[in-house]
Amino acid sequence: MTQLEVKNLKKYFMTPAGSLHAVDDVSFTVEKGKTLGVVGESGCGKSTLGRAILALNEATGGQVLFEGTDVTHPRGSVRKKMKREMQIIFQDPYSSLDSRMSVQELIAEPLNITGIVKGRENVRRRVLELMDTVGLASRYRLSYPHELDGGRRQRIGIARALAVEPKFIVCDEPVSALDVSIQAQILNLMADLQKERGLTYIFITHNLSVVKHISDDILVMYCGCLAEKCECDDLFEHPLHPYTKGLLSAIPIPNLHYKRERTLLEGEIVSPVNPAPGCRFATRCPHACDKCRAEQPAGREVMPGHFVACHRAEEINGL
Amino acid sequence: MNELDLTLTAEAEETGQSRFRLMLKRFCRNRMAVAALVFLTLLVLSAVFCDRLTPYAYDAQNLLEMNQTPSKAHLLGTDNFGRDILTRILRGARVSLIVSVMAVAMSTFAAVILGAVSGYYGGRVDNIIMRLMDMLGSIPGMLLSMAVSAALGTGLVKTAFALAIASVAQLSRQLRSSIMLMKNSEYIEAARAFGGSDWEIITKHVIPNCMAPLIVQISLSLGSTIMAISGLSFLGLGVQPPTPEWGQMVAEGQSFIRQFPHIIIFPGLAVALTMLAFNLLGDGLRDAMDPKMKR
Image: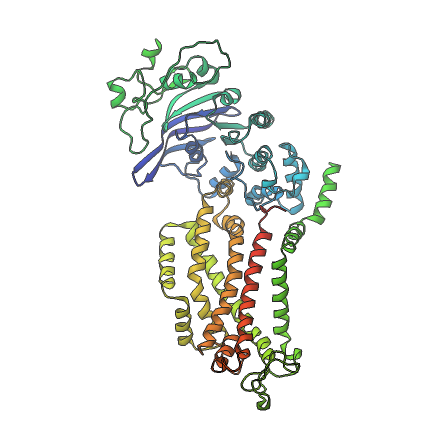
């Protein structure tokens, strides 16, 4: 069942230099209970995409449908309902928690704002349950976030997101601020929670091994546009977009004697401010032709479930 | 669940007080701040009970005991009308404290609203408010207070209002800048992701996080307002005789500065010490209220 449908989503920011196309015409769907990994280099619009879906930065154009309801510009009761069903886990567990609030107050905040749990005693009980769910010992109840380590802080962030019992969570690089051993703990916690509660995730990251570990589908973004979207295994085995190929060949392999063909990407990323017509990747693409420089490719389903935004996808891959 | 219930009851006793106690503990560690608090408490108490603390009335003239230097009978001496200076200083504290607290309360109230609105919403609202504040701020504070109190006349509330107007611009500008820094932080965005309204975000996150600079600023303003009241009274625009006020006492004593310097030294000292105490108190409170400080 399709839970989230994003149609031609656009988010432009007005800057002194011109209009910055942070997300440009991105469309995809996410099935209920699945994880969509969103990858791409820094500044390619991954986080902006996540925030536009949650209407934290309202989209400039396009539509976001959650279970059939348009939540692109939510108002009134739709907004209220949406904020309970769609949540976010932030990247930085340091700045996303108000340092003046204790753990108890932090986790109680969403309960109080949404009003789903009423009465001091009930809120307190629910907070302790949530702390138990995310693996925080109840003795940290009165601690302040600065007294805890990054992993525990991120657990608070997860507890806060879970407090309103959402169906869908945007995870905005939730582990990139943590060290590797803690990353695994948090990823496993998130996977367990997904299994238990049937949560749907959009998992934003620039770490390809993380995304491979946790995703069902993967969406590759380049400079605000969709480059490729397909099932996780499919992407790692048969990447079709030249950018994806370059990205995957950059994954380090811990084997000294392994020789492989490298697709090196040269050149600079085009500026997302007032971008020229044509494919954003054309400046760096080894296969770019005149059509690529003139016309922006739309995402096409070249194989069942495999979307690629490249004019020459079939040609290059011999399909 | 048993353990849960136990912790709940234990917590019921802790919460609400634990944080305040922690704050108190941290505050007490700061000797200077505690000394300042003690000094200010004594000042407030003696301002309230000044009529019973000394055997003299603040306005009783005794021309036989004019211009006496400090002695056992008159601990701080007498002025040129033979009035007891200690009595007049204590009585003057009453005026200074009342007026400065009123003035700072008025300006803080206005500045919190103006600063929060313009810092949080930004854009045109911010522009309008800040240009108005620029207009206020472009006139030197003391001149503005003098003009306002000359226009309104004298009296406790009017003087307080005149002083409040002069400090609103600076205070609201400071609040605005700390709010602007804060409004883009992720925890504000997180609160918005839960559907928090602007009101909830401003009252639960924005203002509490501005409290530390605000409290320091309130404390500093109390000190400088006391200075400003004295200034106004020194010029004859503030508190009118026979009600004693420190600045006015300095003004009255200035013609005798060569022969009897004690007439103006003691009221001057009262102004200086009170200002110092408010500043030290503000520093101590800031350190105590910030949970990021090491315990």
